[in-house]
Length: 444
Image 1 (cartoon, rainbow, N blue to C red):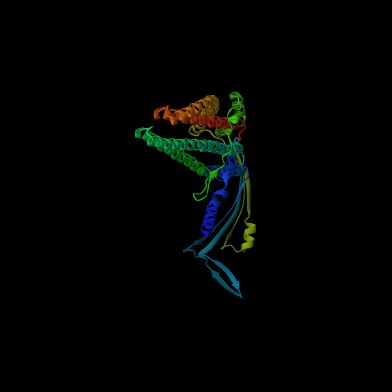
Image 2 (cartoon, rainbow, N blue to C red; image 1 turned 90 degrees about the horizontal axis):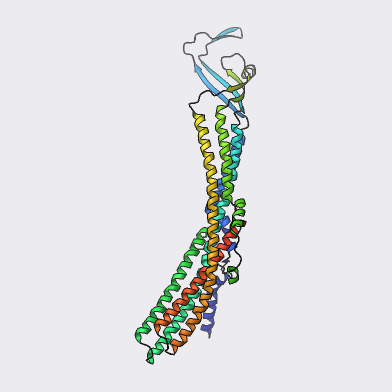
């Protein structure tokens, strides 16, 4: 009795981790990935870097101020004349061959106008920051889409494993029934070996489906950046036939909404704006540049009779001025830059058209898959019902010796294929319906 209680306690303890383990829903996976996916974190760092670039370009509009100093020691080896001083009625002559110089200055400069290059650089960096933000959204969409695909694949394989396990259980019963029939002489050993082979093949199918499910969960774990020792399993919601038979969003409606919300389209539009600014910046190379300068300087010398403080005051020099630079010939550098900027602008326009075309093709693919698989699901549902009735009848006839092993196995394989087709069509329909809504609303 004590051993029995101990065994029950141990089994209960062993079951605790599994029951306490968190089951990840699709929303859980998406939220966790948005915070922890490394690719997405890198994209956010690039966005932060772009924000710093904006600050740097704005700083270029401000004047610059710098301080400088120069300290030097000089030596005049053949200097004969010195400075005579009278101390207590005595005349002293001193020859300074070594002397010390010091200079101090403040210099300011400000680019008043350079053809709008600096201001356009600010606007260009701001567009780059917006593009970096859109890149983050684009990466997030890509990750969300991939997670959704993997999650639905896991749901499909979970159902497929149940079907394969049910088929395996039927094969075991058939094999057991075959052994009984061999004993009474109603079935040959050759036919029994076929039943045994069918049961072994069904066991393999279960293991293969479990292996595929483990692989998809591994890919999902990697997208979430979970550690290898962290437990992970997904929650399996109920996916009804009514959901798969629900309305499919209209193709044109999804495309029109996606044009207004997809970050890759907005990014391409910003690339066109950036190319216009790049062209304006390139053209600024033909325009003059006006700069304002100012300076404040002073100096000291050890050979002077004045003290350091007096020299700093009396040697002060202030200056200010304007500088105008007019480009005349720059070796066709500006002309080349303008030509390349125009090519970049045409490329940006073509990129937008290409993105729009790719977006339509992607949405059209989802729509066709959803429509086709929904029709397949209807047909497969009817096929499963027919195959199930046929197999049940075959099994009854086989049990009383009216059908042979070949007919029984053929009916069983037909039923299994129909069930797998039904599941595949069902989950592909659900997946593509969800992706269509995602492209229309930018949320899963």
